[in-house]
Image (cartoon, rainbow, N blue to C red; front, side):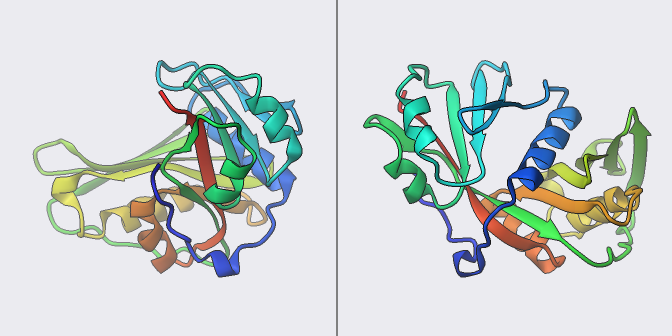
Length: 220
């Protein structure tokens, strides 16, 4: 079982189910997945990959999680919940384990423009409502990348990655700024789910943790 950083748990707020659903819908769009559908008081997304066939997502602790978990026999069907991992685990039958925790974050206010270090080039393309930003190194390889989409009242940042050889050069900040510049509506709420590694970067840019985002699966 992997431990989970508290991610500023003392500041955790209740997650609005509508906000969570909007984020989940936007995430599905940016990743080319089916939109979430209501199921057991949460939402179901058919992810369809070898490692994850399906995910069930809940805005918080719900007795329906226990009922749902009792019907699952595959280690490739995940249950995710806004809240501490220990709280999720208490709702699950024996044989389930926590996977690496993440953090549901939002951002308000301005997004600062970020300049690139010498030798890098920014490429930003928006197609079918999905924005992809890439920073290319001198050799043409991708040094950093990220995606964003605006949908259902949210502007979602997704898959922000800086390659190890190019880290600590401000490229992640530049990707975030480039994506944020494509936000159309000033009223859309900025949302992302951060990994442990990305948490400090986003916090330094003014993002706030709203809740741990916990994941569990049947132990393989």
